[in-house]
Amino acid sequence: MTTAPAGFDARTIGRWISDRFGVTDFDVEVMSIGRSNLTFIITVDGLPRWVMRRPPLGHSGGSAHNVAREGRIMAALGESTVPVPHIVDIVDDPEVLDVPFVFMDHCPGFAINEPADWARIPTGPGPDDKRACAFGMIDTLAAIHRVDVDEVGLGDLRRPGGLIERQLRRWLGQVEDIALRDIPIIREVHDALLETMPDPARSPVGLAHGDYKPNNMIFAPEGTVNAVVDWELTAIGEVLTDLGYFIAMLTVPEQYTSVWVPTPELGFPTSDELINRYQEVSGHEVHDVGYYEAFAMWKLACIREGVYTRLLTGKMGDLDLDPETAGAGVEDLARQALTILEKA
Image (cartoon, rainbow, N blue to C red; front, side, top):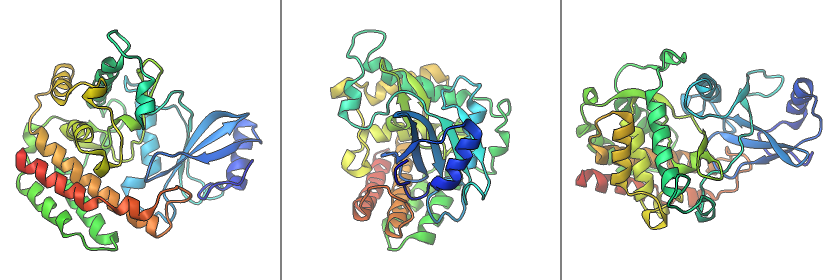
């Protein structure tokens, strides 16, 4: 194989792959998407065969980068109606790697990262077209929220208190613990969100993905969702946080989110259409979407600050991303959150 990227021990992992699958010749590359846990594609004879996920370099704990937890969630959903990659193994053996990792089969298809990806999906009208693809994303989100967490064995993910309350505390704490610079607006938005938080009793509770957007799904050529990936932020709590995040990612300018998403001008439904579809297929009454959008943008600002810090300190492996580029826009995201909140 070629030189292994940082975070992938070719000698010990190679021995594990050989013992487990009888494969001795393979290549590894870092996936271009993903800014937190490190993701590698393993190719055999030039074709993608497996995907491996591990925590960032220098990881010292915390559920956000707990890949064993993420792998367990995907494995538990494997028999549900939620499309997920097939988990081959969750390995926690220091003789193979110094951190746990998830090893899964490569899922065929493509994520939507740029206009060329969206252009691959047929243009309607028809049962397999861009609008059907978008509504399929909403249907899949509703399927996630319908999961009986006790039935699939994930009931122990429950935590005391509401999800938003917990995450406001957690993300602010993480920023204050690791940030190398002072960004007062992060706390300002936190305080505004805490003060205007909707009554958790009004919100349906279930499995919330936590990072649900088009580039965290893998699509078939006709636009069907083959798999939902990146479950590292998943928790049990107010599921409308997912809907707010999805809508916010579609409406906040790309210059702030650094994520390209389709727009109605390119055949994607409007936000109102997507919200109506979710309400129809989920059976949940949708409320306070603006608040959940603002919360999503604030959380994204906190996450982006963490990525900036890890890049600056060399803990993101060989991911080709400039720290200053990643760090730019954190304050803009927080301001976006405040603007959305004021209009909600």
